[in-house]
Length: 335
Image 1 (spheres, one colour):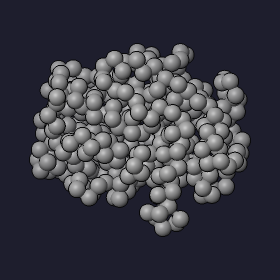
Image 2: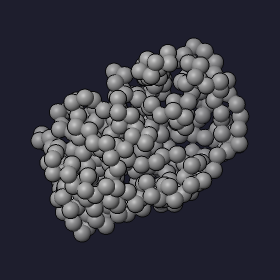
Image 3: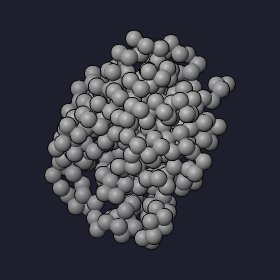
C-alpha cells in the first residue's frame, strides 16, 4: 500500500482536473489546487482543498505552494484543449501548453518534487495508419494542440533523464461524462465536447448539434472516437501516481481509453435514447485538424496498473453528463 503524499493539481478547477481532485480526496490523498480560472470554476474545487488563484507560469507562486503544502507530486492538467482553435491560434497553444508546462516542470525540479503526472492526448498520434492505437504508434500530430502536448512529453522525458524526477504521460482519448455523484462535470460555456453539446441540446440550451463532416472513412461517414468516462480517467491518475511512487526509477506512458469507438451519429443516438427525445442534427463541413477515427489500445495501462473501468458504457456516460448538466443549471440559476 502506497502512503499518500501531498499532491498539487494544476488546472484543478477545470473539467478533468476537478475529477482528479475528487479521486484523490476519495482515496485519502492531501491535495491542493492552482488555477487561474480562465476556463475553470471556483465552485468545482471542494471547500476543504487549499486553492491558489494564479498562473502556473508564476515561478514564485509555485515555489510558495510547494513549500507551504510540502508537495511531493504534481498532476498537471492546466492548458488549452480546443483543436480547431489551436489551428487558428497556434501561438496561444504553444504558450499555454508548452511554455507554461516547461515552467511547471522547472519549478518541480527546483523544489525537488519527485513525481509528475501529465495530461497528454491521443492527438499526439495525429491520423494514425493503424487502429487501435498503441503507445508505440508513430506520433505525428496534425494540429498545434497535438504538437504542444508532444513537446511537453519530450521535455518530461529529457528532464527525467537529467534529474531525480519520474513521470507518467497519460494520453487521453475522448473524455466525457461527469462524476456519478454529480459533484463535478463539464461546466465550460461554449464547450466543444460532443456529449456536452448534445446534452445541452437535449435540455433546450442549444437549438441543434452540428455534425462536422459526414464524408470520413468510417462506417457511417462521421468521425469515430473512443469515449472514456472522466471518473475512470481520474482513477487512472491516482493509480499511475501510486506506480510512480512504488518504482521511482521508472517513468510511464499510457493510453487512456476503452478500446471501443463510437461515431458522432452513434453518440447522438445514445443521447436520444437516454433523454427520450430527438436532437436536431445539422450537417456541417469538416473542422480543421480532425482525423477519421481514433481508438485506443488500452492493453498497456491494464497490464501496468490495477485499473478496472467502472463506467465503460456509452449510455451511462451520457446519463451522468445529463445529470450534471441539470445540476449545473441549478448552480448557475438558469434552470
